[in-house]
Length: 478
Ligand SMILES: CCCCCCCC/C=C\CCCCCCCC(=O)N[C@@H](CC(N)=O)C(=O)O
Ligand SMILES: [Zn+2]
Ligand SMILES: [Zn+2]
Image (cartoon, rainbow, N blue to C red; front, side, top):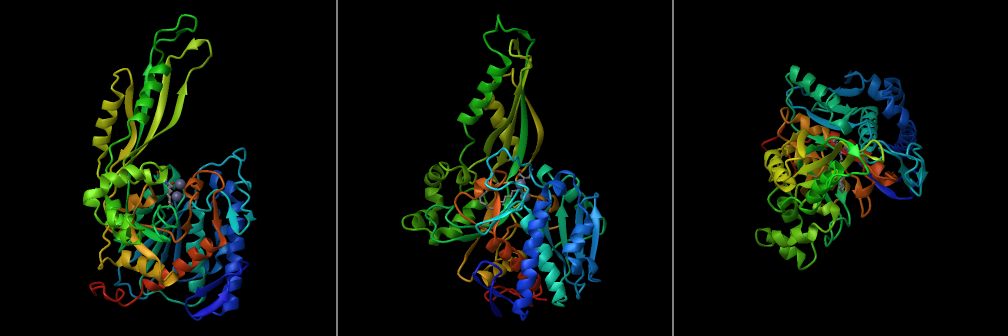
């Protein structure tokens, strides 16, 4: 173990292993700079999909030159790495992240231009810093210097970097899965983005909690439309396409889907966290069978915690009209819904039809899928326990609990390759950070970025441990 002051932060961080402190600091500094450069290239990297492998090769020379690493491009822009282990009889695992981002506009009041990658007050700002270039850079930086350190992993592993996660991963993740299936690969576990360390976001919880998501919500996008012949604005019909459709989406907003709090994986999450809540919440959370309806009413007041309570309804697009003096012949709206684990797509569609309750409104499913299966998190679950151990190695007093991802990730395409899919990055998020995802002022602190590198650096080594930590059974002994 070495103790050293981390680059530029003045904060003391503990680094595992015997690596020389100064060397570590140089590498970390280099990678932080490289990360900022990568973020500065965001617009080119993202919108032109110019995923120039030479750029990555320059940033991570050891990864790209090591005989232990096989790299291939998938669907032109996604990356698949195979890191060979010294014990081929051990089942491999897989880390996922994505290089694409949602759009950002410089007109949207960012404190720092969204594609500058500039640093301000200890934070690297830019679209993708949280979602999900921090993971991309963290994984590759950790791999770079575990290889530089001369460490040979025993258990082989894959790294998949998708290029189209924000548009469902249908080219990137789906083709990576296809390739692995063709090669007969089965994965011990998969780890992707989708949950984190929450500090102060869950009201009443004392201290931060690392939530390793064991599932993610289902989703659907519905297109609602109304058609009628166009006419002159001076002789309007009693109801217009726009009015009918506006009333329908208003009914959806005013009648949220039913409360299901406690009936999905969020139940286990709050039970695990119960003892960390202040009185009387600790008592209430320990007795969800009785208090779930009461807690649901409190949680639904906040938009982040409401997402754990129910299937959410978001009207995201509304298009109608071609001229201000013509009654619109057509109006359409798109509704994005995230399906709670205790509900199915079919049930949600039935409910929407009944709430809209107007045959003039046509409802079409653009896409939809059920909530994902719940991955195991008991004491014999290798993936969950190794991720937990890695968190505890970094933050010994951290509370670690199973969680739920309220959005979607590329990992959902991997369910035929593994029944143990987890979503977690070690970034610490505080109140206000949830709004930065797909919002303005997306940023990552230097500490969070360093934590990301450290986490994967330790995870690679922890996956080689002989048996699960004390008190765990030894079914996965090597
Ligand atoms: C969605 C933001 C949730 C904020 C929750 C508050 C706490 C933050 C904790 C963990 C990090 C959340 C990671 C979110 C991953 C988002 C992935 C994403 O944007 N996926 C897209 C993919 C798609 N097009 O389906 C999505 O829309 O879900
Ligand atoms: Zn993402
Ligand atoms: Zn996203």
